[in-house]
Length: 111
Image (cartoon, rainbow, N blue to C red; front, side, top):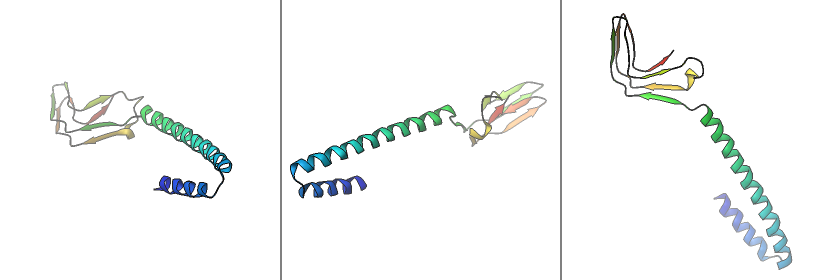
């Protein structure tokens, strides 16, 4: 809507200008639009890079895990403890974990 309004104002303003002045106004407007486009592209690139550097990990709809006798069972995800931020891990809809002398995981496990 804002861009349509801006185009309407620009078209209306050029109706009252001579061709020489309209050409100058168009050049200035083109320069501003180019700078704004470059700024938007850089902003999008920076936002994309920051999101991909710390992507969220989602674990959902896992099954049941049962571990016995010192064994381990995992139907979720096992992540290294260091490089992964636990706040960026989302766990929903996990199954049951049963460990009798072992280790069972149906969500996210940090090792």
